[in-house]
Amino acid sequence: MSEFSLSRRLVAEALGTAMLVGTVVGSGIMADKLSEDVAVSLLGNTIPTGAILVVLITMLGPISGAHFNPAVTFVFWLKRELGLVVAAAYIIAQILGGISGSLVAHVMFELPVLQASTTVRTGAGQWVAEIVATFGLLATILAGIRFREAAVPWLVGLYITAAYWFTASTSFANPAVAISRAFTDTFAGIRPVDLPGFIIAEIAGATLALALFSWLLRSEKRTAIS
Image (cartoon, rainbow, N blue to C red; front, side, top):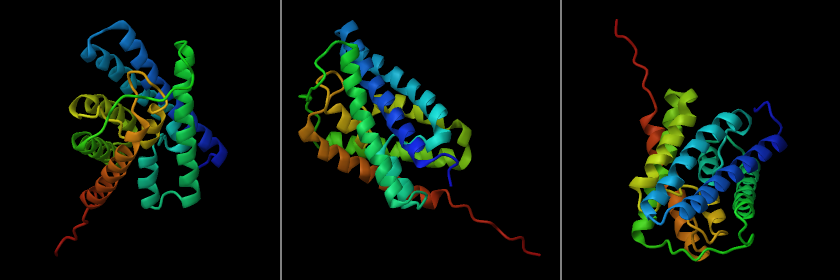
């Protein structure tokens, strides 16, 4: 049982997801403004995202667990560490928070507040990349909690920093972030019509990670033979 009320936990989830998406979208806008080189822009998008994850998980993790991601919440529901009502409330808070992060980024950069992305992100390669990205993220979280819980903020931040570059999709790995990025027609955007493929792939990757790591992390106590 958390020492924090559900209302505080939901605000932490909404705030954390808003700040995460605001960083993803805002740094993408800034990077795109500063360079015409796509590789440089991607690097300018990657570093702030990894950095803010370390900050947000450290800051808000003790309150809500710092999911900021429906795929993470889904896995903890499957693990029976969250009830169905609380998990659903977390996911709603994450999505609403993420969308608000996109809108605030637009305000900061004096862009039209309401937008719909036209960036095409679809196809088998993108979907496999999202399965891989989300599998790796949940593997990092589950193994991190099991072996080095205090390091989880850094592990997640470093994993996402790496996954931006080794996945074809640039590692969304988060249904709330994917939905929120459909609300921005900027560097970080994704067409709304492409969302279902990404979300299905992300949930599949998370489920695969839970299945494998539930077995992999189960230790066997050996009894000495006298």
